[in-house]
Image 1 (cartoon, rainbow, N blue to C red):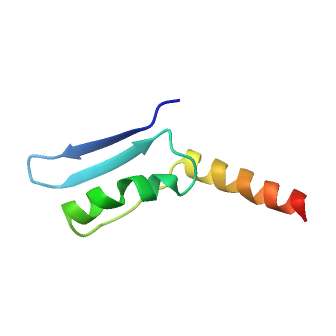
Image 2 (tube, helix red, strand yellow):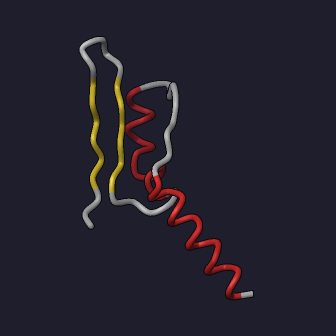
Length: 65
């Protein structure tokens, strides 16, 4: 799956950044520079991809111990 970052700016100037194809917190790392450039973050919605990757990582760590 390819990784993309989509930026939507409304006529009123509000912006929305959406990442696709990133696992876990990689999306936050990838979009951090855009969020800093665009200004204060009003809200954050995490997708199922974020939680699936986090759960997979957690399960992997539990199996190693």
